[in-house]
Amino acid sequence: MDALPPKTWPNPEIMFTRQLIDTTRGRIVALLRAKALTVEELATQLGLTANAVRYQLTTMERDGLVRRMGQRPGTTRPSHIFELTSEVEHLLSRAYIPLLSHLVQTVVKSLPGEQIETLLRQTGTALGKELLAGRRPSGSLRSRVMRASQLLNDQLGALTHVESNGAFVIRGAGCPLSALTGKHPGVCLAMESFVGEVVGAPTRECCARDGRPRCCFEIGDHKRGRIARRAL
Image (tube, rainbow, N blue to C red; front, side, top):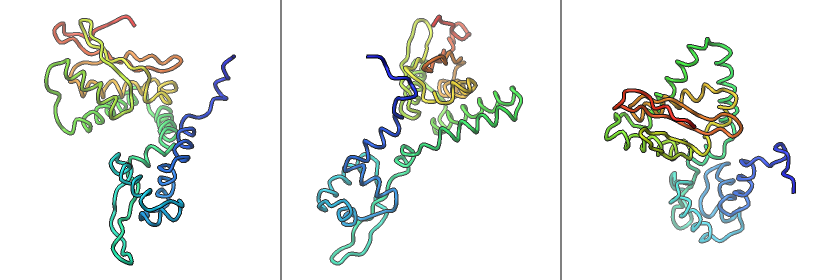
């Protein structure tokens, strides 16, 4: 069977949202997006028992999806009020990529090339400093490279691994900024500076931007005093 043309494939974000909303947990998320509610209020709107809702909220609270924001007086005892965490709002929002894409496009049109590169590199460096929480890179070069790969995966949604063949390369199976890098390759410079800040060594991006973008960062070989150049 022939594959469907790319434009006919469903939007994965919309599919994920629909699948989420079709579950009890997703229906709770939908209600809490409108306003904070108690267990009893959720149970009434969902047509479920309070215990069933309480079970879902317990697991959602454990997973960092909801939190308690206070209590509301009840007929016999106060009821906890639940709200969504900011992390869930971030996951559900589809505004970040379009807004960021237009922001980058506006900057590209407004500034000279050298200023754009400086701005992107400063942005990546600042992100690295933030995720390092003010701590300077320490340990062996290998451990710092592993740390950078871990931050890319855990904090930025990448899927990378570390290769070593006389030098270190962080290589990704995809790109967490693929919606931007295809249109604005300079965005890779921001990530190059991010990795360099975390590793504390010279870094060069070697990202693949044709077709499905994939991250790649070559890490400096301190013994030889240069950035490793590897055939991809």
